[in-house]
Image (cartoon, rainbow, N blue to C red; front, side, top):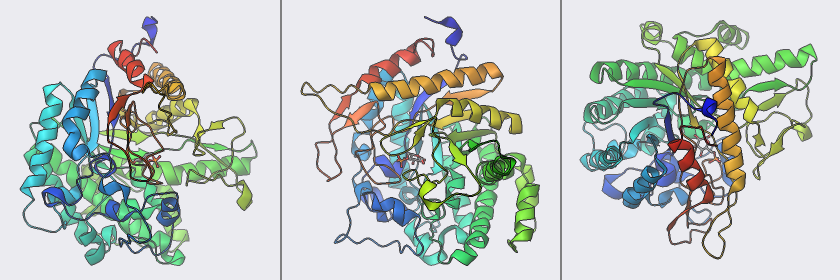
Length: 479
Ligand code: BG6
């Protein structure tokens, strides 16, 4: 054992999921229709997510909708939580489906069956001493708010979100002490359908609309921070950023500057507002140069300043390499987030570049800029797994991926970064967010469910399950 590789006492080891990708339970317990329910399965989802004018309708003649059934956590949560407990999870990151609590989003009163479901989930977690880490909004919102209000384009949605958040804090104040506002808030620069609940209708007005919707989410986030601190004084609430450390392709200063600017825009803009409580100067310059004028109501800027988040959570899967002038053929395919190919890195089967050192860079960049506690709430490898005849699954590639990233977290802690915990993504196989596939598996637990909708839903422990259990038991000393 390498004692020097231990993590701090109380480090929150666990795993992460999102309601729409694992619960299923479509329409059950009074659940309303959400944006996740209208997203089809298969690789075309990625194209749709980036498309202009998506209509948020279900068309069963054309597509399948894997999120409707997902992995049926809605009925199997006890079995799944028992498996998390067996791995020794200290925490479990999950999200609440807004449509279970407010099926249309704008009701006056919440739906009791939805609230009761999450009560049972939290009770089950606490039975094993697992701390819930709860995302209030993970890639979904009521379709009614999309159709009637245009999603986060509308200022009115701020009030509906605040009501939803307050209901959650009041109901679960004794059960949930870690909260996250919007999952990967900055993803909406690339894929607004999941984050904002609207599709860009017109390229010209893309940034005006995008920044207005961000402003509404920032105000909503501050209102949630305020409510959370009032209602649960001993809770902590964080933002959630998709971080892509951005490398210049070479040492040409043009490319170095371009990579820095891209990084500030994508990685730092939202965090600057949510953590420092103000719009950064580089964005104000951008607004001026692009004639963007967002509507800010009196009191908004004071609210942002007064209620920043307590900590920063983020997802890390890959880095990005940028160059100012690039031909369309050079643009990275697969990850949906652009950049050019980095010749030093291997990619996953889905074309995501694997870069453990990038995680150390990310942790240091975040900490240097904000000096706030950090929480890695997503990281992992989406891969095709093979079930052997005896039922075993030898996912050594996943173990290697996670081990290499854990080592870099340890290095970052040595660098002085304050790190709260680590929750690898999709600790149990679930529906992929970007492609709707089941075959893109991240789990320590295999779920017998397939892209064609077939499968028994049986759960199986992969080799990584036993490995991760040891990692947690030794607090990271044994990798
Ligand atoms: C993050 C999301 O983008 O990455 C998750 O917060 C998502 O919801 C995860 O599932 C992995 O992406 P994908 O597309 O492989 O499921």
